[in-house]
Image (cartoon, rainbow, N blue to C red; front, side, top):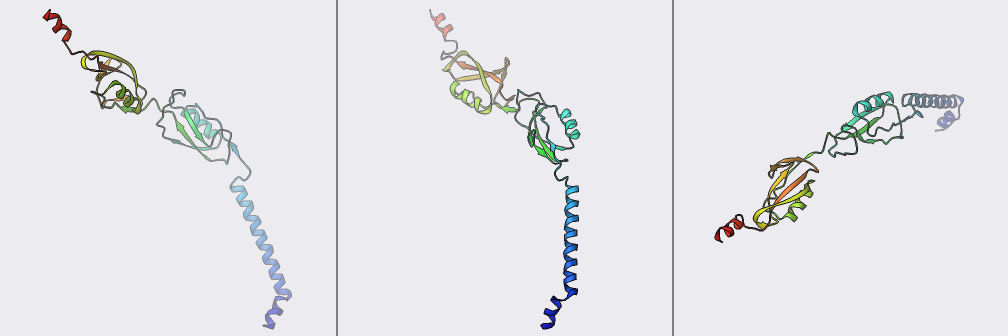
Amino acid sequence: MKHFFNFLRSRVFLIQIGLALVVTILIVFLILNWLKSTTNHGEFVEVPDFAKMSVMDMRKAVEDAGLRYQVLDSSNYNPDYPRFSILEQNPSAGSKVKSNRKIYFTVNPSGYKKVTVPDIIQVTQRNATSMLRAVGLEVQRVSYINELGKDMVYRMKYKGKHIKPGDKLPKTSKIELVCGNGTIPGSARVQADSQ
């Protein structure tokens, strides 16, 4: 045990400890410099504003900025933006990112997605309007025909053509409801014939 403590105080041991510390510090210094050069430490790219830019223009701007991109699907059409233009980006414009960072884009589709026309035949006009709004369709106007069910939907039209439940229409399409006016069909003619 005495020899061990003597060795710890010896000049040889202290030199070895000193060399080990110098080598460790040198290795840490070299690793930090290598990491700094490979990760571009302190070097940032400002993310451009890609809003309303076409996909083709976006690709060129991303490459010019030294970035990468990924296009995410978009199901919500925005009429305020051109078709196939950038709706959203992540990270946002003006953010500082490392070179070669991936930017995620949401693209405006070519138009509204199509929705299924619900079965509103033999439903009251009020309920039919609510059901259509629930799927993203709108009632443009209501016309009436001689049918017994007052305000009951008998037919639907889109751009002047008859449509049926299950048909697909672009979201926000405007539909005409053809409802009954509470009159029995042909009753006016029967009364006229009886007089």
